Length: 429
Figure 1 (cartoon, rainbow, N blue to C red):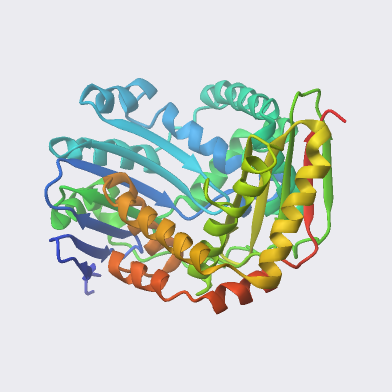
Figure 2: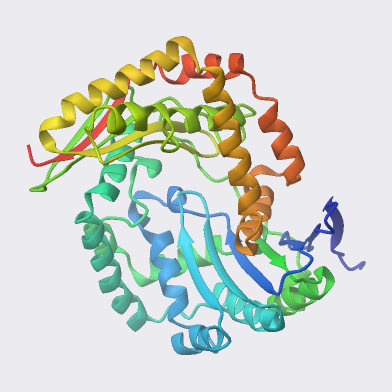
């Protein structure tokens, strides 16, 4: 019987000597690296293509709960033995959970890369998930949920998602609720781990002072020859069907606070939509900085709010554009009136030439400046492989931004900013 072989290809070769290579092991695991000349740091990440929207109603909060639990120990390491060795060499280690993926990462000196690979892969592959650890971490997560409940500027976004997407997976909080966390069983969490933390759903991403072949050897060893050489398991497609957003919905929570927090949600696009660069320019001009129209009109000209900005969120199949403001409760109506006026004017007339130029410049600067950090580079190539199925060069991204025209932005604004708005408000009234 012929042994299955890994496949390796070069994705990018930069003029500065940067080199992006991808190896896919027979089990479906993808290993993508970016060698960055002239740096001494390395960022190593293990990305798993599962998030809170992959949970059933009975599993709400499981993906985030599991992220916590994996730091509690493996079959061969205690919680102390996971974090202490990395911190002892000046490294940092952490993780985060989103709606559609989970990431575990470490950033270390190049001389300590093997340590980072060993610790992070052990954590991801061999979580002990002991019953006593589950109960201990359950209490921690309940505290985290309580803390989030006390932060209205965060809570209002959860309220908005629930109003916009309804009771389905996208509408539920990543953290889960007090009730769902209390009801998660050890067997349910272990089953979620076994079903989803599988090679074909993982991307290993590394950027910095790296040698691709060495990393592939290390990762293959960590997975074990039998596991690494096995064929990927055929699995049914994830049921990631978003509820059609409820246009014009309103959500309100009463909290005895000094400030009201409001989110207004409008139309959006899916993550891979080719118009995402035009949307980035639109968002930058609308409320992406101190020179944006929202900031100037709401804060600078009228002094109605301390914090006001716009943002975009995109998933694999849906998305939205939002405006956030934090203001005194008796100014909510005035803030909304000004925001709606600004949004309406852009929807009707598009951006000025100056706004278009500033929006492009803001996007270009964010792309280029972000590449000065190995962590950002590691994240970029991981998302390219896991979420976009492409890793364009920085020059390609800059060219796509430059090609955005005023007409494209105006057309997109006319489509997305004219849908019935969804409101989420947390206030003392």
